[in-house]
Amino acid sequence: MSPAPGRGRGDEHVGDWPQTLAEKIIGAHARERVRAGQIVVVDVDLALAQDGTGPLAIEQVRALVGEGNGLNLKVPQALFFIDHAAPSPRAELSVAQATLRNFCAESPATLSDIEWGISHQRVAESYAKPGDIVIGADSHTCTAGALGAFATGMGSTDVAVGMVTGKTWLRVPESVRVDIELESQASGRSGEAEALTPASVGDPLLAGPFTRGVMAKDLMLTIIGSLGADGATYQALEFGGSALRALPMHERLTLANMAVEAGAKTGLVA
Image (cartoon, rainbow, N blue to C red; front, side):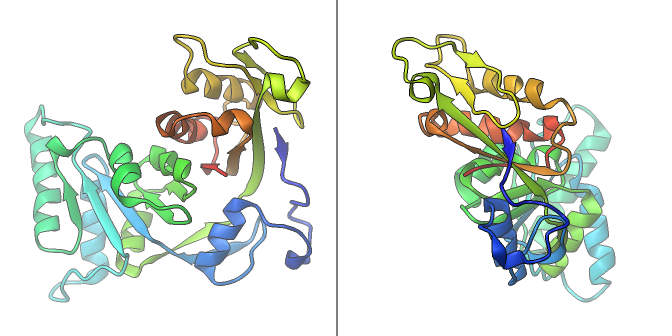
């Protein structure tokens, strides 16, 4: 695991080095070439909230739009999910869920109701695309990074602004490349490898064939153990390597989902 080469807030000439995946996506949505540490306004492709965070987002959307001006949202896709208290166990939660249903009925926003599934799974399966910028009022919005999208969690008010204006601001994160290599390929040895081997900074994480009961969550916990619980604060973890290419999509979703547990702004499968 190592910082991407050439990254640094002190560098002055943005065009002098290759860009990371995070920089490329943000730059495409800011319509300019960007570098780590730069603050930019970007176009948002998809904004979401769930039944725990959605009511405040809706309140802020209504305040921003104003009475009598309609609920035209400039974000291409606004999604509301009822998945955290489903079915509702208390009256106040039922009222909150009704707020989401009513708002989606009178606006362009799309509702994913109780029977449709978990927000992060649905976003990955049906909505997010590689190269998108996805913001959500949920810390695990970064799950969609498994698709090669720049997906990140924000507060309800920030998401509301994104829905109304179709834009948000970002500080371009520094990127940390996390190479996960098959141990036999990295070392030249053949045969069954250790399932997981922690890496020092600058070295690839080595992974052998997963034995029964070993999953991507174990791999990500090993990565977090190497980085620390806040070792990637406001950084983009960009995953790559031969072992990663062998992982099915549902395992990649787990890696991206847990990037926030190391403090990362997002996790992307590069």
